[in-house]
Image (cartoon, rainbow, N blue to C red; front, side):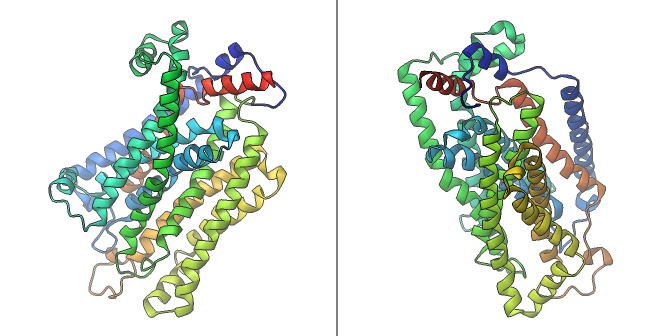
Length: 438
């Protein structure tokens, strides 16, 4: 909220109350639904004809699906960054961003789970994870931590929402009948008593403490899915920290993008201010420097030793057929946003938005480059195999499913923003009242 400009409670409620979709909102939602339907049709074709409709083969058995999985898992870390770490650090400026972060986190982790089912080819194989589970398998660890992380993220979205549900339930005339039923179902028990508030606050703090090790675990275990496989480019003890630092960066970039769009289209200039962009920009610069450090570690050490399989893999990344995507991910995804956000003018909303876009797009390419080049460069050279086994480029079905999953994440965020306040109303009112008293 703008400093030295306290607002009335009625003004805050009016500004932050969930708004109906305008023409742009309806077009945007329709566009996302169409992209999701195209992805669903492509998945139907995959179910009917099998994975043969994709470009996945014996060597590249993961491809764009697992790239999307790693990307979604990474971007979901934003919930623990904004909601947990900054809340526990008593960074009051991050309060208007907490719900945005949790909406992104919950949406991303949902589709991270779904894209794994898509990659299995036959969805009923998901049952085998539970009926034939092995504690020695990193996949089992991944299922456990993803499920735990999803539950905690959902609770961190829901519990701070309870006081806002009381406000929403007290204004039934502003809502449709359907929304009133949702608000009553989710928050009818909340009376706002001191006992309830004390229990709720303690629960939120406890969840903030719990989600940090769980978030670190989910990204470490995801990295182990690669690092425990003996292949050039994956045989690294750096992968855990490398994945976590990259996840923090893409999560921070996603928040910058969401801050700008929500601020612009929902008229939240009084609540998501230049100060928030300035502080968040500084956080992203720090995270970009950290991730750049781990990238240097990841590539410099194998380049120095230059074992033969690693040599071919690095040559493909640095100067071969993957070099364009690799240097795009490094320069556009890390270096340019860092230089933009290092300067005060670059931390204003518009340039910060484009810096965030570059971080997110670069991060997706980075995940694609973690998966595909390594699978095309096994220790034993590929010999006597069809030409299609030697290269990989996703089929239209893969692209449609991947884009459909990305659209699905955005659709969930869009619908959540339509149903619930984007900026916490109760906390904004409390901070505004404290500001007036001072």
